[in-house]
Image (cartoon, rainbow, N blue to C red):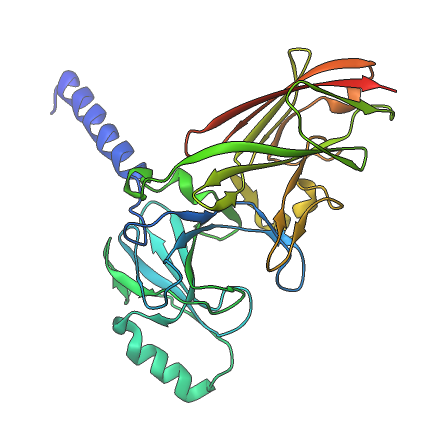
Length: 329
């Protein structure tokens, strides 16, 4: 029989191994790349407005760039499709309980040629979703699963990547899972460009004065992470009125049922997405109980004058602090 001391040390060691395995960071699916779109950005492509449920990696506007498995896993779904939102898509199941999705591919790994050929022969060019109920098609970490493309709603070639729960009922911010040290170094900072108050838009001016007249202030802000030449969505926003935290939102996961409800986060009037324009206005108020709103005391703010401080952070570790005054008319 093991001594109590030995058994205790063994338990500690096994717990350590388990935690390292469970929280091991994924590799980046595209070598020497950087992020061109972040989790829970607003999208109006497809049939209905929705959240961007993953992140995009640059393939430098090229098709045919290898896209790799971020961790050991096996194929659970293949979507053979030129159109739709995702286009040609591959989904892997991993031992840590998560699934990863790779979309807008131009073609799949050569390992899947026989399967894809068989599906094409049977169904032609129509959309086909193939569910795999075994671990027959295994991929190792770093193995090519497909090649970058612009199938689906993509306007330019890139690699779309998602992390989902094993039942695919929750989408998670992939930047929580990948090793960001493997991304190409690029300059970045937090921007706050515009403020909307009660439906009227103003350029943001540090320490400026803005006016409201309703029972409580209804503010939206146009904010981004500026990365290279891209404007990306942010992860977390805290709003303080006279040093009191009154609103706090963290955009790190979204339930499937909220995927098509982006106006829980974004101002419907100010937010725009077209082929050439993206303007995302985050609402700093909400009258619903949604999981990504962590603090919500805006409706109880009925004063006449507030010194406002807004703290914005992103998944890359960038921070921005912005101040202005709100005054009742």
